[in-house]
Length: 178
Image 1 (cartoon, helix red, strand yellow):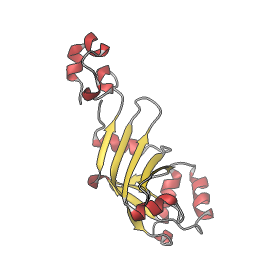
Image 2 (image 1 turned 135 degrees about the vertical axis):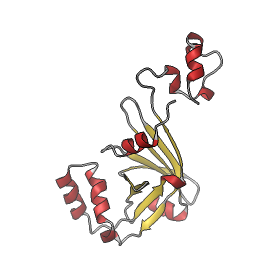
Image 3 (image 1 turned 45 degrees about the vertical axis):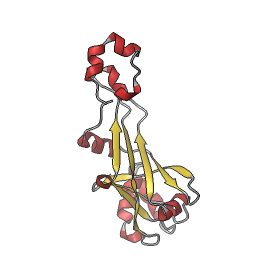
């Protein structure tokens, strides 16, 4: 499957309205997946849990997270991250990073509505967290486009030796990336 270049990844992460799913690990070892808003800036994915968020408690207890960001339209770009979340600003320190929170909200709702939302909820403390991509395992992929071989939709390890698609165009299969 074709991987995104760093520039393609960064452009995809800048697309407004794309929801991120964050997976955290509870004290009992159980996973929790939560769809949230985010912004990608300075090589980091930033997000803002509310003070009583279950997943903020998880991050404080075990910083390991997985992030999944994808789109539902062709070419079905995807970014999956496994890393460690940091709490960059604690709950109650919201004034120090409120402009970043405005930028996050503005990715999902019109500017005036985003500002009204932020101003209308600024009495409800949040933390500011991030995952630095350079310190994480980052996997990306998308569907083949233009004249790229169809076989590229899956990594080679997924195809069986007798796959129909390989039999029809073995020369293309050899060119696909793993």
